[in-house]
Length: 299
Image (cartoon, rainbow, N blue to C red; front, top):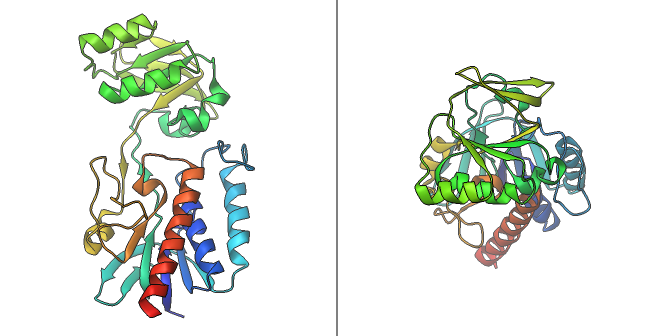
């Protein structure tokens, strides 16, 4: 089968949540997924009711089993390379399985983190170098911790992390850009600022031990928060006419609809709320709205 009601690009939490809702509504659905979630290296997932502490792989297995019960949902393990927006349908081309068409398209692609080239950073990412105090903060509370960030984001994150540990140091990696008021606030809360350039991270099996600076100094820590940039499948987005918001995410309305009326986005690619719980909720909403739109178009 190559024609579907809905094609979902991305088979992680958001995409599978949308597929579940659509499958229960007897919609023919194709989920295209390449099996490369951004949280593959994360040992545990938290802050999701009834599943707190499970590994991302466990959650994915349970979710896939739920969705697979619905026979109108099909899966293709492949990478979506292109998408074309025709007047009455969408066309998606894949790397290995050819082309598929659908009336509606869901982008549940997640985001791709762009990690700094600091030796040791990649090996620690998701394990002891983390992005979110809601997802990881409880497990590393009170530990010697550093924050790698700058500007307004540094101040925002510092306040959140300081609530979890007072043993906190801010690292700017040589790009100190804080104003006097910001520096005074950090000093008030006894948060030291280190502006030295980072050379590398030492670790054992992803557990960070030291930040090594280019001047030879070392900082012993057990956890590091870092805000890193990300990329999206810009080629597909441009072809579909989907705009980005001021933060670089896919712009969606309250119903997860993009600036293309037949394309929806859900999960990490369209929200700063990067969590399993939010991904599932936004996928559920997208699936429900798509079903209702298809009903209205045919009834």
